[in-house]
Picture 1 (spheres, helix red, strand yellow):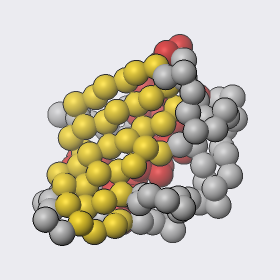
Picture 2: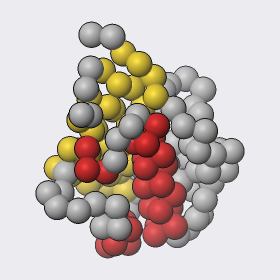
Picture 3: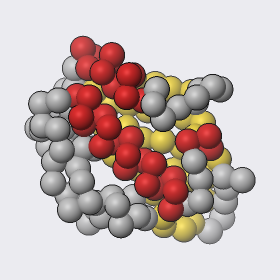
Picture 4: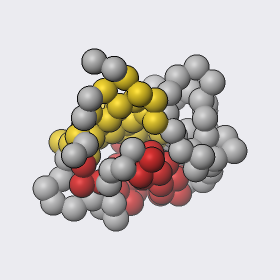
Length: 127
Protein backbone atom coordinates (compact mmCIF):
# COMPACT_ATOMS: atom_id res chain seq x y z
CA UNK A 1 0.00 0.00 0.00
CA UNK A 2 1.50 3.35 -0.97
CA UNK A 3 2.13 5.84 1.81
CA UNK A 4 1.88 9.59 1.46
CA UNK A 5 3.31 12.15 3.88
CA UNK A 6 0.84 14.81 5.00
CA UNK A 7 2.06 18.11 6.42
CA UNK A 8 0.82 21.58 7.24
CA UNK A 9 2.72 24.88 7.36
CA UNK A 10 0.75 25.56 10.57
CA UNK A 11 2.62 22.76 12.35
CA UNK A 12 6.32 22.59 13.18
CA UNK A 13 8.09 20.28 10.75
CA UNK A 14 10.03 17.50 12.50
CA UNK A 15 13.47 16.58 11.19
CA UNK A 16 13.30 12.78 11.24
CA UNK A 17 9.65 11.76 10.93
CA UNK A 18 6.46 12.79 9.15
CA UNK A 19 3.81 14.98 10.75
CA UNK A 20 1.26 12.51 9.43
CA UNK A 21 1.15 9.57 7.03
CA UNK A 22 -1.76 8.56 4.85
CA UNK A 23 -1.91 4.85 4.05
CA UNK A 24 -4.92 4.11 1.87
CA UNK A 25 -7.85 5.76 3.62
CA UNK A 26 -6.20 5.81 7.05
CA UNK A 27 -4.39 8.87 8.40
CA UNK A 28 -1.88 8.41 11.21
CA UNK A 29 -1.02 11.69 12.93
CA UNK A 30 2.26 11.69 14.83
CA UNK A 31 2.21 12.68 18.48
CA UNK A 32 1.70 16.43 18.71
CA UNK A 33 3.20 18.54 21.45
CA UNK A 34 2.63 22.17 22.39
CA UNK A 35 4.85 23.84 19.81
CA UNK A 36 3.90 26.53 17.34
CA UNK A 37 4.67 26.49 13.60
CA UNK A 38 8.19 27.80 14.30
CA UNK A 39 8.87 24.99 16.79
CA UNK A 40 8.67 27.22 19.87
CA UNK A 41 7.04 25.83 23.03
CA UNK A 42 3.58 27.19 23.89
CA UNK A 43 1.98 27.33 27.34
CA UNK A 44 4.94 26.22 29.42
CA UNK A 45 3.56 25.02 32.76
CA UNK A 46 -0.08 25.38 31.62
CA UNK A 47 -1.75 22.08 30.61
CA UNK A 48 -4.85 23.79 29.15
CA UNK A 49 -2.77 26.11 26.94
CA UNK A 50 -0.64 23.18 25.83
CA UNK A 51 -3.74 21.12 25.06
CA UNK A 52 -5.15 23.94 22.90
CA UNK A 53 -1.92 24.04 20.86
CA UNK A 54 -1.81 20.26 20.56
CA UNK A 55 -5.41 20.06 19.32
CA UNK A 56 -4.88 23.02 16.98
CA UNK A 57 -1.89 21.16 15.50
CA UNK A 58 -3.96 18.03 14.98
CA UNK A 59 -6.73 20.12 13.40
CA UNK A 60 -4.24 21.62 10.92
CA UNK A 61 -2.99 18.15 9.93
CA UNK A 62 -6.53 16.83 9.54
CA UNK A 63 -7.35 19.79 7.30
CA UNK A 64 -4.20 19.19 5.24
CA UNK A 65 -5.49 15.67 4.56
CA UNK A 66 -8.99 16.93 3.69
CA UNK A 67 -10.44 15.64 6.95
CA UNK A 68 -12.09 16.93 10.11
CA UNK A 69 -12.37 15.75 13.69
CA UNK A 70 -15.38 13.71 12.59
CA UNK A 71 -12.95 11.41 10.76
CA UNK A 72 -10.93 10.69 13.93
CA UNK A 73 -11.49 7.18 15.29
CA UNK A 74 -8.72 6.91 17.92
CA UNK A 75 -6.81 9.31 20.15
CA UNK A 76 -3.93 8.42 22.45
CA UNK A 77 -2.88 10.99 25.04
CA UNK A 78 0.39 10.87 26.95
CA UNK A 79 0.41 13.02 30.10
CA UNK A 80 3.35 13.63 32.41
CA UNK A 81 0.87 13.94 35.30
CA UNK A 82 -2.66 12.53 35.37
CA UNK A 83 -3.75 15.62 37.31
CA UNK A 84 -3.74 17.37 33.90
CA UNK A 85 -6.56 15.10 32.68
CA UNK A 86 -9.40 17.47 33.51
CA UNK A 87 -7.76 20.44 31.77
CA UNK A 88 -6.98 18.34 28.69
CA UNK A 89 -10.49 16.84 28.61
CA UNK A 90 -12.09 20.30 28.80
CA UNK A 91 -10.07 21.52 25.79
CA UNK A 92 -10.59 18.34 23.84
CA UNK A 93 -14.37 18.59 24.19
CA UNK A 94 -14.23 21.81 22.14
CA UNK A 95 -13.01 19.74 19.18
CA UNK A 96 -14.98 16.50 19.51
CA UNK A 97 -18.62 15.54 19.30
CA UNK A 98 -20.50 12.27 19.48
CA UNK A 99 -19.83 9.61 18.55
CA UNK A 100 -16.52 10.23 20.30
CA UNK A 101 -13.39 8.46 19.07
CA UNK A 102 -11.92 5.61 21.05
CA UNK A 103 -9.42 7.03 23.49
CA UNK A 104 -6.54 6.03 25.70
CA UNK A 105 -4.75 8.24 28.22
CA UNK A 106 -1.58 7.18 29.97
CA UNK A 107 0.88 8.81 32.32
CA UNK A 108 4.49 8.78 31.21
CA UNK A 109 7.66 9.62 33.09
CA UNK A 110 8.74 12.24 30.55
CA UNK A 111 8.28 13.45 26.99
CA UNK A 112 10.87 14.62 24.43
CA UNK A 113 11.43 17.97 26.19
CA UNK A 114 10.93 18.74 29.87
CA UNK A 115 8.50 21.61 29.19
CA UNK A 116 6.03 19.30 27.41
CA UNK A 117 3.17 18.27 29.69
CA UNK A 118 1.28 16.21 27.10
CA UNK A 119 1.50 14.66 23.68
CA UNK A 120 -1.47 13.42 21.63
CA UNK A 121 -1.56 11.21 18.55
CA UNK A 122 -4.61 10.49 16.42
CA UNK A 123 -5.82 8.08 13.79
CA UNK A 124 -8.49 9.04 11.26
CA UNK A 125 -10.39 7.20 8.56
CA UNK A 126 -10.73 9.33 5.44
CA UNK A 127 -13.71 9.33 3.11
